[in-house]
Image (cartoon, rainbow, N blue to C red; front, side, top):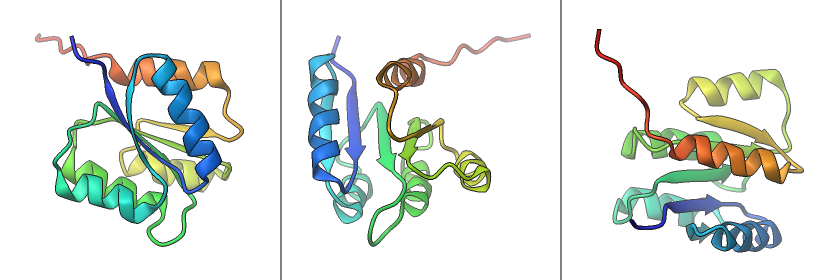
Length: 129
């Protein structure tokens, strides 16, 4: 079985590098994007199918909400996890309304981060009644 593939987007290259290394260590294949345009190129090209997309919210250029909207249009079934330092309830509500799977606040709790990714990778169980 192939390793899950994650698109990781963060304009802070130190965060991008450390999270990429952590995710690689746990067996994920990571495509990193250090800016919103690179992330848009990954998604718009639809060349790569990701199992999970993790994106920062506050980025120069296209912000995380705009990126979330494009990602959900292109890959409606791919869970998108938002990570950010913004903890305002209206921002959280907006991200969830736009289809975010989860909303994690920085600094990240690495156990919560890992658990959220695992939940996102679980196939949804459909029951027929």
